[in-house]
Image 1 (spheres, rainbow, N blue to C red):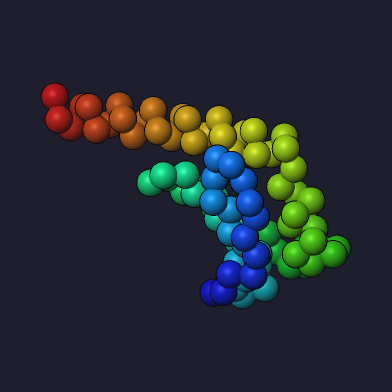
Image 2 (cartoon, rainbow, N blue to C red; image 1 turned 180 degrees about the vertical axis):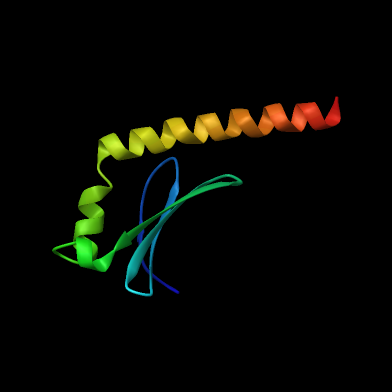
Amino acid sequence: MRIIAELPHPDFKISILNMNQKYIVKIEQDTLEQSYKLSEMDLTDGVNSVFEVLDEAFLKTVSARFKEMRKDYMDAYYRYNY
């Protein structure tokens, strides 16, 4: 697995990796991570198509999901400790 691109974003670290004829989009925020796999066969313009998939609407949902993930984790952590 190798990193082929990193996209700048003010809220996340976005890395695009390539492995086994798939692009893996890894999005990190603090200790949380989301990853998405895209087959090279499904994309017409290689890694440039991955950039097109990562549009503003998609990144808004990623942000909302990070908020949900953080809440879920904090709820579980609270149940464990109290």
